[in-house]
Length: 85
Image (tube, rainbow, N blue to C red):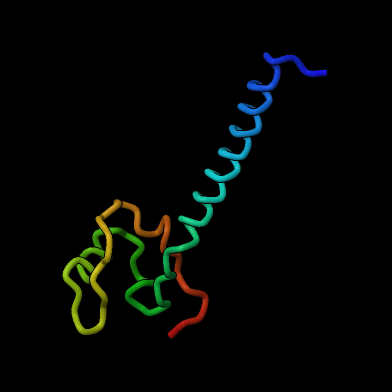
C-alpha cells in the first residue's frame, strides 16, 4: 500500500511527463505550421534573410506582407516548396 508521501511524488512525475510530451508536440507543431516558400526563381536564387525582407517587409502585388515580426532566420520555419512554379 502506498504511503501518503508517495502519492504527491507519483502525481508530480505524471504531470511532468505529460507536460514534457505536450511541450515537445507544441514545438513540432509550431515549426510545421509555417507555409513553404513558393519554388520560384527569386526564392531559389537567395536564401539570405535580407533578400526575404526586401520583398516581404512592405509587400507588393506579387509578394505578401510578412504577418509576423522579423525573427531573423526565415529558412528555419519556411522551407522551399518541392514543386517549381
